[in-house]
Image (tube, rainbow over all chains, first blue to last red; front, side, top):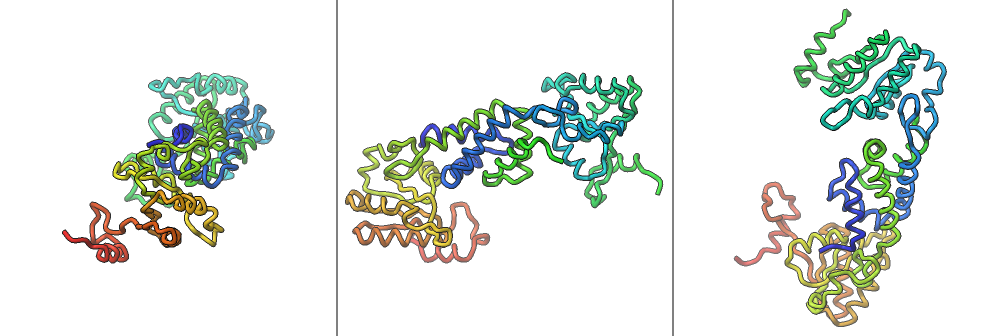
Amino acid sequence: MKFSPLVEKLINDLQIMPGIGPKSAQRIAFYLLDHNRDGALKLGETLTEAMNNISYCPKCRSYSDGEECEICRDAGRQDSGIICVVESPADVLAIEQTGEYNGTYFVLHGHLSPIEGIGPGELGLDELARLLDTGRYHEIILATNPTVEGDTTAHYIAHMAGRRNVVATRIARGIPVGGELESIDGSTIMRSLAGRSPL
Amino acid sequence: MKFSPLVEKLINDLQIMPGIGPKSAQRIAFYLLDHNRDGALKLGETLTEAMNNISYCPKCRSYSDGEECEICRDAGRQDSGIICVVESPADVLAIEQTGEYNGTYFVLHGHLSPIEGIGPGELGLDELARLLDTGRYHEIILATNPTVEGDTTAHYIAHMAGRRNVVATRIARGIPVGGELESIDGSTIMRSLAGRSPL
């Protein structure tokens, strides 16, 4: 038994969102239809507006409305001479929340993955090369995720930086603050030992 | 630090969906922006189309595109003389999946809840009264949820049916098939004992 085809279509289309399966999509569809049609109409408009108008900052590839983003317009941060490479805009938020970093960013929107057809072009590495060529940066921090793909991407970019005499550094891997040694995996503990520092 | 205001708006608007908090909304927004703008544009259109065009079947109040739904158009089911009252269209789906029920439905889209301002009018009980007045039904099955509100609603409707000489029945409460007695709450076991049947 099916409801009207439009209900089916709504339930199907909601499933393009990550983490939303058939059951959640049905729950969301019924909730919106019964309790929040105005909100859903507004969401529909916002989706259209956002997908059509949000682009990447021409300098750091973070989200912006076409112009340079807030961080790239900040002269103090540009003058720091440090650029931090991350995989996603969410990582920019995470680092900004610490309040400890005062350089600029470069967002890859992914990592090198030949299997998925993601090469240096897809990650904007030619733009990054052009930035490094300006001679404005003395250090590039590689803050891609500590996964196989993130490490590979970091090594690739470190090589790029080396040829341009920019120092490439990698964020530290080790025991998370508040973590318990006994519940941490072996390779993290190995990294943590290898990266030990004098007290 | 904020991205463009449109990104913020998208993350905010996504949170009207039940079960989607700030973190999930951000993940969904970034995923759609980076990996599926076409899908998101289609979802935007579908939301608008669905909210503007999906209405309730004039007979059973299940979802339809304005006309009577598939079940209400089925003469065999209309002739059964049995109507089943449920709280939500999802309950219709659940009962239909058993393939054991051959009557019609009436969907309340909620339950009586004076605190939330939901009275008989909001649940369409005047329409249900009109259906019962036709004399076409000899039994009304009350399949609202076995909660305090569901029980109250069932009693209210049973009273309506009684005045019209329609037999009102309530779905059985008891141990779920495959359930283990030791892990079932006391009130369900009490119900299960009270509703015992000869073997």
